[in-house]
Every structure is written in structure tokens, then in C-alpha cells.
Amino acid sequence: MTRSIGAVSHGILDYALAVILAIGPWIAVFHGSKQALWCYIFAAVLFLLALLTQMKYIRLPLHGAIELLLAILLILLPWIANFSRGVNSRNFYVAVGLLMLVLWALTDFRGRRGAPVAGRESGPGGGGP
Image 1: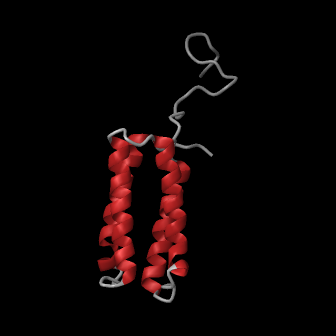
Image 2: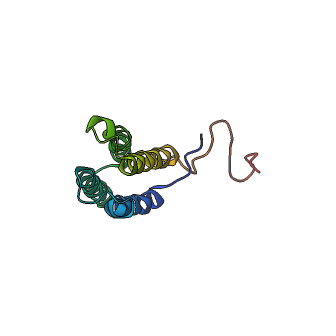
Image 3: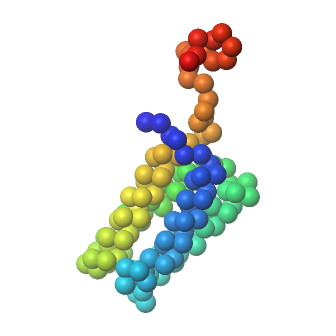
């Protein structure tokens, strides 16, 4: 699979996901609950992760590993924290977790996007298109 999202685009999407997590409990109507509190915590963690990565305190591969763990935790938290019966909150958590997994899968965390493919020469006279 081609990892087509670069670091800058991923950062923008991380900030957007943090906003979605912060306002999600109000939109999905589960504000004022422990599910909402967990959403706010995840929003803060994701925002700080994006900010610290942007400021170069956290390297992008480590950011990707942490984000993968956050996505899996978001998907599993309704059952771990015993609020899976709340359909709105459960579906919200699973949907955002799946969205984060897709973002993780499509992001080039190692900076190899645009690198030449092995076995193909590029440049003048290199046999490229």
C-alpha cells in the first residue's frame, strides 16, 4: 500500500481530529458523562502529540507508534471502560478510532514518500517516464 500522506498534511489532520474529539460529545449527545471526559483527554493528548511533533520534540516514527496505540485504544475503550451500551458514544469512539487507523495507514512516517523506487533509475537518461 502506498503511504501517500506527508508529515504536514498529517499534522493538519491531527489537529482536525483533536477538534472532532473535543466537540464530539456535544454533537453525538453524550456530554457530561465519563465517555465525554475520555474524549476530552484524547483530544488533549492528540493535540499535544501533534504540537510536540511539529516542534520537533517527538520524531515522526514515534508519533506514528503513539497514534496507532491511541487509535486502537479509542476502538477498544467502550468495552474496556464499560460504556459500550451507550450507542452514541460507542459508535463515536469506534468511528474516530477507525478514522485514525486509516490516517495512520496512509501516512508516510519514515519520510520515504517521493523516494525513487528500487530498481528504477530516474533522472536524465535513467529510463524513467
